[in-house]
Length: 387
Image (cartoon, rainbow, N blue to C red; front, side, top):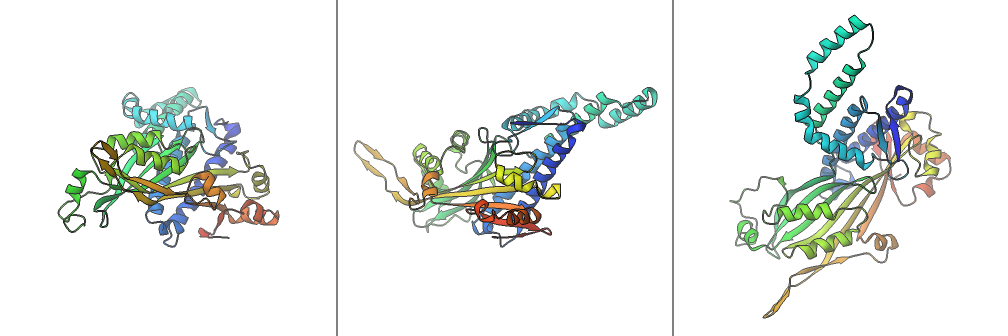
């Protein structure tokens, strides 16, 4: 773990890190915003991931404000290249306290007047007042912006009916910042709900969504109010990066007799590589150091994992009890990586500035470094795909 200090002598590495992350998120935004992006072909994945990137930008914006008065900022230098989990926790605590702390501070106009008076009378910079002003602006950014919190609670974004099973069908997503891997994760699950109350409420006699029932999407939490709190708790306990998707999907299927997960996706943002900051990809970072422009000395990777139900085992009930319906999830055992990850399919992606890509190509290691990745190159504000 590396502590990036905010002192003036060390300001350059700090600025380079934040500028590089900002450029990487800009590039990923561009990739997501184009209608031909493969992520848009994955149903709602692209639009959903974009929401969490906006939250991550909010976090980075607040962290930059915090550096104006805090001593240091910790980055997972040897693992993910993203901010350490403690930064995420600190931001969450400050968010909860922001309103109260701002109320106890002088307003910005008063602070400005006191700074002017101090400069005129003391002939020096009012360091304590400057730090107070910086803290105030930080707390305002924390109060006013959304952030990527340790757990971004689930949200239902689509509701329909499976006409074959006559069950309501939901698409739900949530975010999780993994504290061990220091990685931002986004989850999406498509599931059916066989709860009697929800079937009666949402499903018409012809097996379609009732037209007279208004569902104001998006809905905070799982649409089923009887299960919403339990579902939140499940997401908090079962979203670790160390858990395979097969484990998460099977646990969800087992813990909720009336929820039937048909597909689970996980978007893993990172690792992030930087020539001067990270140390978890030695070959990559040595090549990036040869890139002339400092704002192009980075590489961002992400992974999309997916598991789906191949078959639903019907419920069996008898006089003395029985078993509810359970899913049988498909794991592609013909692919060793799929089998290791416990997934049906996955994709690795890499986003790299054009100058950095040229450096990789010139090194003769393009095939080695990007062998298992779909590589996307940023050039002139556009993303050139699948190099």
